[in-house]
Length: 502
Image (tube, rainbow, N blue to C red; front, side):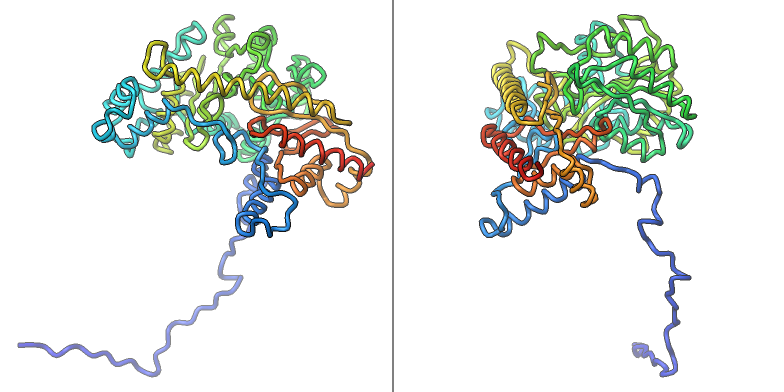
């Protein structure tokens, strides 16, 4: 028998339950309700200047010549992002070909003549180890790639390296963040020595984990050299202030300075760490960005520690974002542990396991970084041509820009022997300082904002990196093409700005 459909009758007296959503019964989400450590994080490289530059970029895209702006494009000189649109550092062909075949292995059959044989062999080797890059890898990174990183380090330094001590990461920044999070054992008391000027990642990460930055100043008068006496003085003051120094950060080559440490200084740094029980954190992501390698060679801290037979705990960082690779967006890097106890390394593994694994394309990029084509390989000639050009162009730009900046009144600039940047010092008048105070800005940030408004060039003020009281700087990259036009805009602005606030 077919049943009649059920009918529902709603009573007129029925009312849904009433809720009184008042501020007393519902917790509101505000900035003040967030973790205070997060509120304290500052990252100047992507700060106010970068945000305003993006706003200008949107206006130019939408309105073009009707934008009303005194420039027709934004020049992002605030960040070392070699392959950013508008710059002219191309990706390395070998690296991208391997990446393409790992992204879609069927290309090896569909277009067998489109790729050199050494590229196909590399992709097959990696695919046999990894399988699809859409799957998770080992949390510490693909074992084969870690083995290749260890071989690279051993060939570079002449000392053994174990893949068990290698952690592949989503860029060097992820490794730095992990190490600092592990080292801050007591909030607002555990400290880390950092160079001033420094890459803002370090102060930002220390703020995030409630650690204490312990600044030591580099010597600008001597090409931004590292002074052991300055580090000792910083250590002494930290201890007097009740801060427990846990680690020492060295950035070599420097960011933002491009300075390289001399071997003698490196040995003194290692001995100092041994004396004071410090972990040495060696940020070496610019190790292949050398403009005058014969005069300013790179020596890794791994080599120095091993040559000395030192027991100092060392963690060294490297990345595919810099050098000739410039693959910032793929997020690939690694760190190597040396003299790190097994139980501490187990803690590192536990923490990286929480994130499951680093990006697979970043890991593949690391493999290409540490295993470039060798002489005799089909891809070698093109790889050599591409990398030589990148080194040559960057060295020429750096020298040219430093020379022209040094000719400006009130500007002095160390001709950087490494990395991707220049860090000129600017003398600002009392009138500028007063105007900046009225605007609620640091004087060099006031200068940088005016530069952006007038030219579309985005730089990072020195106040974001740290500097001595009463000194002012800004950092700009040497990656931008059209150097004459680029530096010409800087020169014209500086002269007009100085005349306005004379």
